[in-house]
Image (cartoon, rainbow, N blue to C red; front, side, top):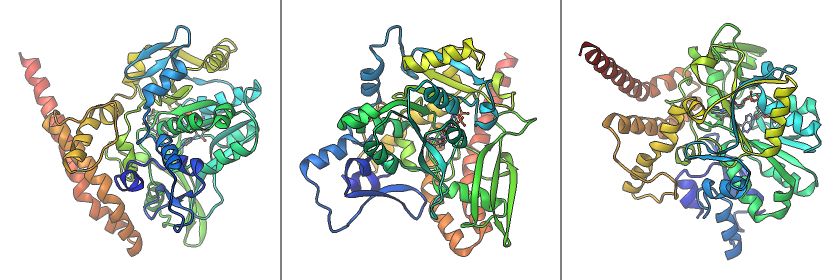
Length: 459
Ligand SMILES: Cc1cc2nc3c(=O)[nH]c(=O)nc-3n(C[C@H](O)[C@H](O)[C@H](O)COP(=O)(O)OP(=O)(O)OC[C@H]3O[C@@H](n4cnc5c(N)ncnc54)[C@H](O)[C@@H]3O)c2cc1C
């Protein structure tokens, strides 16, 4: 089971197995990705019931999928809607927080932090499980528990960085209370699977906030961005992945990195457009498991938040969220926020929310069929997904998937070699043919599109 999951890259590294079984712990591997390991390699025997629990707490192995879980959670809510692409929803919004500095301090519209603050203020929860800076030597960020508004605010901002929740979930099991958690789709789904196995977690984890997630990154993504700013691997202290640039569209954000350069601590701000790694389609340092989820909209979360990547909103550099509301308490919080002028949102339709993530949907949900087909053809086991394996895609879309796969599988090894040589240019040269092949494909696709449009206009 372990090899089926981990060796085939279907493991999201959430930490659920380390919660379900204390013979397992989470560790970062040499590529900067989390995986489960035996605490004591001599104790590798698991009983039948332990194996069943492990299977049922793992997204890639569980007998339940996101549609099953979300149906159990939300189908009975009065006036709730269901949409193939979005899952269940009671309300859909695009907008931002106007109260305080939530928007300025957030990555998008600041709703992630504001909803937690409201839940705490309304005594709905005692603590929040989210991502904070880490003081451990091998990582920059980790899941932590915040119990005050100030702590919640300090944990704002998107971290394109691997995290795992085994330690904080174990704390929840030890410390009675009401908690809310934020996470990427696989993390929220595996919290639901854990809660199905463990009544204490079911009772204590009261609310879940889901983030939309293009894909997960390894630690090397942050390290590589900082290296391009002059901070050598190992010398990076902090990174803000989403620094808003006042006069630029929201989608053109910068990073701010702090680290040691020639013995001196320095902070550097660089727009992402100047850095290799900016292209989310190219997806440098993607955790491969991200290619084997079909959950774009974090369907098992009580509310899903993403960036409003829509031309009518990105022109505002301050940022906006797309918001999919499922839980009645979160619905009431947002409605009260609208009434009290704490948030400014537009009510939108499902098509608008979908449009904000259309490329993500095509890659993650639709073209998953081709990735599954390829895995099966290569003789690998594949997890059961809602998308069926298929090779029926246009030539250029199959090629794009092939190139993305090559980048995902080959780049981590090239990066390790570059770090061993202490040579950033070596890495940039090594990845050039892969990146060129991918970019050439896109250039050709755009050329064909333009010619077709011209021919169409001439008619
Ligand atoms: C790896 C990753 C990929 C993403 N991909 C997309 C995408 O393709 N499309 C899209 O629309 N949106 C994506 N997002 C979500 C988006 O970047 C914003 O996080 C989201 O819109 C919330 O912004 P906010 O201003 O409301 O949140 P804020 O007020 O900034 O609060 C963010 C909250 O999220 C928590 N958080 C940060 N990083 C993580 C993490 N890695 N895991 C769990 N919790 C975290 C913080 O601790 C904080 O509580 C992604 C986020 C991540 C972490």
